[in-house]
Each structure stands twice: as C-alpha cells, then as structure tokens.
Amino acid sequence: MKFGTKAIHAGVFPDPTTGAIMTPIFQTSTYVQEAPGNHKGYEYARTQNPTRAQLQDNLAALENAKHGFCFSTGMGSIDTLMKLFNPGDEIICTNDLYGGTYRIFTKVYQNLGLKFHFIGMEDVANIESYINSNTKMIWIETPTNPTLKIIDIAGAAAIGKKHNVLLGVDNTFASAYLQNPMDLGADIVMHSLTKYMSGHSDVVMGALVVNDDNLAERIAFYQNACGATPGPQDCFLVLRGIKTLHLRMQRHSENGKAIAHYLRNHPKVDKIYWPGFEDHANHEIAKKQMRDFGGMMSFSLKGDKMDDALKILSGTHLFSLAESLGGVESLIGHPASMTHASIPREERLKSGVTDTLIRLSVGVEDVEDLIADLEQALAAV
Ligand SMILES: *Cc1c(COP(=O)(O)O)cnc(C)c1O
Image 1 (cartoon, rainbow, N blue to C red):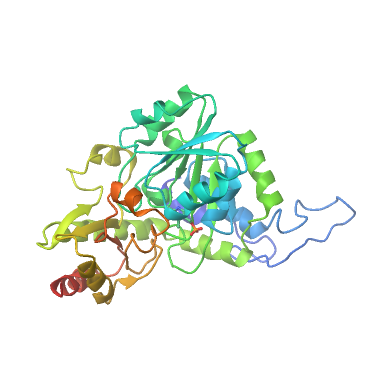
Image 2 (image 1 turned 90 degrees about the vertical axis):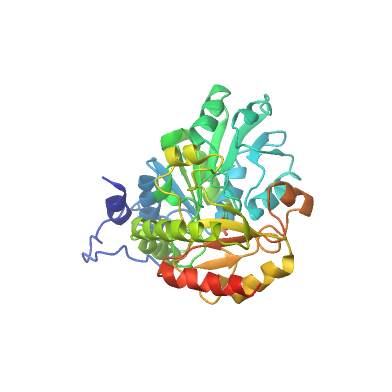
C-alpha cells in the first residue's frame, strides 16, 4: 500500500457491531469480563483501548514498523522512552534539540544519573568520538528546530549499528509523510502527534514506533506502568487528522517553497534556513531522505535588532503569533523568547538562534495571501 492509502486505511476497520466506517471513540475505563481473566483482550483503559489500538497500528504502518505506542503528549513519549535507561548510561544528541527535550534531558534525567552529550551532527562522523561502553542511544532531530539543519539518518544508523547503540529519531518536524527513519535504519521513531500528524491544532499527543519485539515489550510495560496514555477522544482526533496528512504535507511543502524563495529575495532578510535550497549545507542528504522539504523555516533580519523582529511578530495578521507548529493555519514565532527560552543565550547563539530569528510554520492557506501578509509586516520595520 502506498502512503496516502495507508493514511486512510491502515490499522483501522469498520466497527463490527454497527458497520460505522469511522473508528468509534471507546469512552470507557474498564471492560466487562465473563469470568476473572476471561475477556476479549481488554481489561483496563490505561493498558488497552480499542480507539488507541487502531491509532497505534495506523502509526506503525505509516512508519513502516511493527509496533506503535501512543502517549498523552510528545514529552510523555520521550519521558517513557527514557525509562529504558539506567544511571550511568550515556546518550548522544543533536545540539539544537527541541527546547522541551533539552529541558527533560538536562533538568530531569541528568539528575537521575543519565549523561547527555549535545553535539553538532551535520557531519555524523562527529558522533563516533563520543561513543564509549556506556553509550546506549543516539538521539536526533532532523530537520532541527529552529535552524532546519539536516542530519544524515542512514549515516547515524550505520554508526549506531557498528557500536550496538540504538538510534532514536524525533520525526515531528518532517512527519511520517516527508520522512521514514525506520527505512533508513533507525530503531525508534518518536512523534509529537500534536504537530503535523494530527495537523489541526486541536490535540496534544505523542507516539513511539519500533520494530524490535523486545524493545516493544519494554515500551509497552512502561506505557502501562507509568501511565502517560492518551484518552480515546484525542486518539480519534489524531486518526481523523492523519487521513489528510499526505494532502496537507503536499500543500505545506508547496507553500513553504514559495515563501522560502520570497524571503530569500527580500532586502531586509539576512539568513534564511530551509532545507530545499540547493546551497543548504546538507541539501543532498535532505533530497535523499525526505520526500519534500516541508513548510518549516526560519529567517533572521539584517541589523540584528530585536525590536524589528518583535514588530514583525506582532505585525502579521494571517500568521498568528503562537508556540507550536504543523497545523493548517500559519504560525509565526520567536525561538529566542518562546520555544528556546529555556536554553542559555550563549548555547542558543552557537546554534544560530539569534535575537532576530523568526520561525514560520507555513500553513495550507492560499500562498498569495500569506506572502502579502509577510510583505506588509516586513514593510513596517
Ligand atoms: C512539540 C515537540 C515535542 C513535544 O511534544 P508535545 O506534544 O508538545 O509534548 C517534541 N519534539 C519536537 C520536535 C516538537 O516540536
């Protein structure tokens, strides 16, 4: 089955009792048993829920993997994954991680004895010098947030395999439509389903996807034991959103391309970060591992005056100033004071998150209207 067909059909089936074509919302906490232990595979809703099960199977199919697990938030999925590790274990991660991931690693799991190395991975060969006998996982985001660096997933996977170290990929920015890390050798794929996957800015949820049965068994244990599981209404919303994932991503990518080129030629724009440009440092890798380049981009302003950036941020009408990304509506944000506020200034400057850096999540509106909106906001500075 090809991607669009899987988005609509994989893992889901008409309700056997009524024929309802849409997966029912099984709003129940428990399931009746014939006799103790004699049940239909469902005992208690933290452990299993049929709405969640169909979403998990759908997600596994979209990532070409065997097992999917859903969590109440993206951070809940990362938190559960971290339970697989023990004090003394080391994890090597990209140095411009999502702010919340950086926070849980440095403020929560570092205190519990895990050691994290935050390193540049645009050349994946860098990873190897940080591997030692305690290294348990390489954790990457690609494209990275907010400077859209591209990391070679297959290259990182090869290094992981050589040293028997897991490779985990936060695939939130790309979505399962633009990129399938399992096909490139990743062991774990994580999603904040809150973003492109659900796509309508109406739900917060996360997922882990794996192939290995033993890893799946351990994740299933922690999913149930720690309990960051989502409710069935939210699972329904994500399933519904995924049915149009391929259509949305095509339009996000088309609009993204037009806006990236518009900004690149704008006299007030200094740097623009978007992996579709041929002179992007890892454009060739992006072309190889992604189906298209998506609607996420960041740009900085000439002069580097924070006030100019703030004027643009509150001067757009169609681009709403908000955290988050990946919804049908366009958003504009200021990483330095919003998504990356928890990262020390020197750290963020090193990875290009300057005071005038503006991030766009380009939506699926008509692109002429979006460009006109940016045009008038840029004219005011
Ligand atoms: C939003 C996001 C997360 C966290 O997901 P939540 O659903 O907000 O908990 C993790 N990684 C990336 C790249 C994100 O954009």
